Length: 313
Ligand code: PMV
Image 1 (cartoon, rainbow, N blue to C red):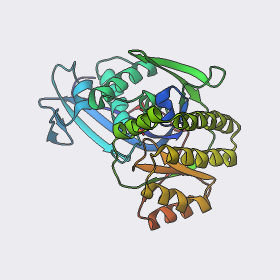
Image 2 (image 1 turned 90 degrees about the vertical axis):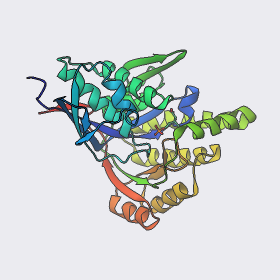
Image 3 (image 1 turned 120 degrees about the horizontal axis):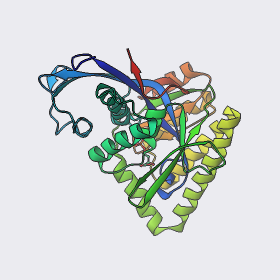
Image 4 (image 1 turned 45 degrees about the horizontal axis):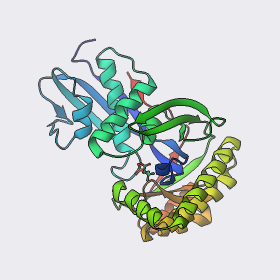
């Protein structure tokens, strides 16, 4: 192998099935990887290019961070099925795949934990905030949980930044079909997290809601372990109600959730909210897609239980 060989890697996108926002306050959350993937190929080159264009590193902070030790130029090719900026982990998947490919190029087989640290650091460099949930799901695939009690799930790794610690464990994911509905509205995570914080600072009622989300997530973890889709769907819908009370849903998200409900075990917003995506658990994906489309959303039928970051020949 030499610098002009291509190194190809891919990583999956993800969605939060239960526990977003509450996780900011140390509560548990569960994230599932999906079969929408980001693929990246890299090789040595005279100039730094991505998809045939010169790289502007100010616009590509993830690339800038991950290539900080590169000694020569690099040529990248990317192709992605993950919509950008909609809470489905496109930047974490890019970081995970890139960290893996660059490591291999340097002759290093990185462990999953090393990849998570590298991808998470790239996310922090680019965005300033966030938890290692996305990076963990995109690296490991399948399902991951943060802050679950030790008795549940196999412990994978602990990530620490300053005085914050996340304990990440593996979630066994049964075969399930979800439909993700993208509102097409981009809503950055930071202001929504701040909105919940303001509510919490003003009212003890908000903390009660966060505790209710915690209980819902813990019950959801058991439902996933039993493969009980009916119970899991009910808990997802309940979580959507709780997130709505916290003020992070929107008219568009509610429209897509309501439209999906007649054909689903349950549905909820996923990720930060305000816009972005919702997700429905269903065994009638075509019906849910139609309902989402008829309300102006873009549906994606996704499978879970997919592999994490991997190299390709
Ligand atoms: O925007 P996403 O899908 O990465 O989700 C954000 C999840 C929050 O709980 C709202 C914030 C966080 O950092 O955990």
